[in-house]
Length: 229
Image (cartoon, rainbow, N blue to C red; front, side, top):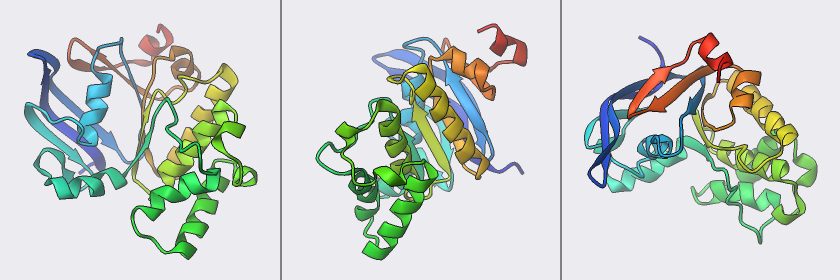
């Protein structure tokens, strides 16, 4: 049996009496780097929200790791979310805390010991190339550096899956490329990546499995279809 970290079956989502996702099937292996593309309003955000239980399907099954998401009790939802590394376009860093403190926060809320937190934060900052900026405030950093801090924070609890929602949306082309390269490195270390993007130049420059949401359905693009984006 394939090692799926995400497995959706027959998932239908309705919002305001409109079908957003229509009897959709999707699976992601632990080794996958996968782009999810589609026009504005195609349902990409709804798709991600299903995975961290910010939205429930009308029908169907959503399995994320060991969690059957629709059947989770409310008290179990934080455990699901800690199993995911979530990266947003708008950073969502705490402006009054240092880089170190922003990454540490993800570990403090789960009650880890201070010695473990220090070791893990420094590991994560080293992985994203920002050890030398640990004492800086977010406002002192470039957009690309801020997104690297977000990725470090997302890695802190050692998730098996990273969900990245337009992580390069606010970045210049050079910074965008460096973020994709960083995510590739993380993927090569054994973490599944699901990346929502509008940036087709990146999809073509760094080719990986690419899925397109259209009319509530999901389609896997061929190599030629990716080149033609």
